[in-house]
Image (cartoon, rainbow, N blue to C red; front, side, top):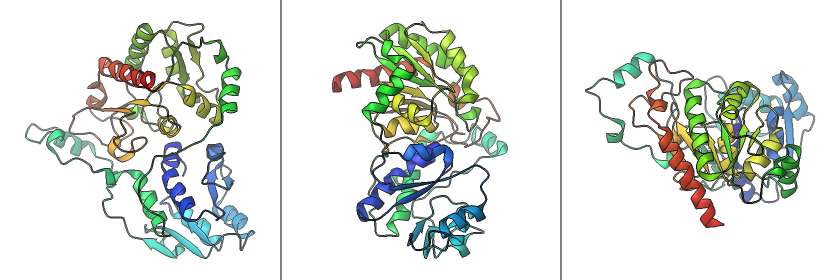
Length: 366
């Protein structure tokens, strides 16, 4: 998968595949930017990374040079390219979902699974129609079943090989040494032992419709720091530097704020997410990573659906997924075409109380 969050959501299927074939050699073809995600993962024996701009023919040829190594290709993405790569590699069995322009490349093109819901982007006219006074409120509509979650899509694929579709939590692995090394690299060892460490991730690569407003992030982090005396680790990519700087500016500094936006490797990000008590984040890749490492997350959801792409097992009470009761959500758009009511309806007080509740749960477990 090309996106960090999508990759994490495949881990239950990979674990079920390993469970079904404990002695098999499982090689994962993955973009180079995500290859380190799979280090130490119990379901993966080999990581085959794809460099940026590498052609489909180059990838197919690389795999074909290992003719005989692979009996089955399980095609997790729905793109024509991913099916063509394993076809060119000459792998005997090629299993994936039936989609336009690629079925000929598969030996087993699976029909959509029962219970699947398509994540369709809504048009602006449709959104405005949903907001008319005579339309029912979302709270009166039928709830989205747990069986619709994106993780089930990947589990249904491994079921074609005889693996169970019984859902389990996504799982990633970091070592204790990695955590200690990451703390030392960014001087987090200056934090007092009894000081709680929280993480915050205010960005979202997909687009602004997935981002709770930065002024609310700032107000919430300041209030939580006043109540708990916590230290904050600010996460983010290179495109989040301005957001991270605004967060850092409003907080009490040394040794309580560590602005690491754009500075961590993927393994360091994983290690430090694992080191946090709770992470406040938008619906984005680090949300899925934190949850898969066992760290509770608090997440304001706007244009996307926690029922379809939320972290961890659906209904896991360790996490707090906040969603406003607005008719136009989820729209799955990158930018809101109207008034951003889905995110603006989630208050700072709600987020602060959710963070405090999650923190208290971690103290009880300790």
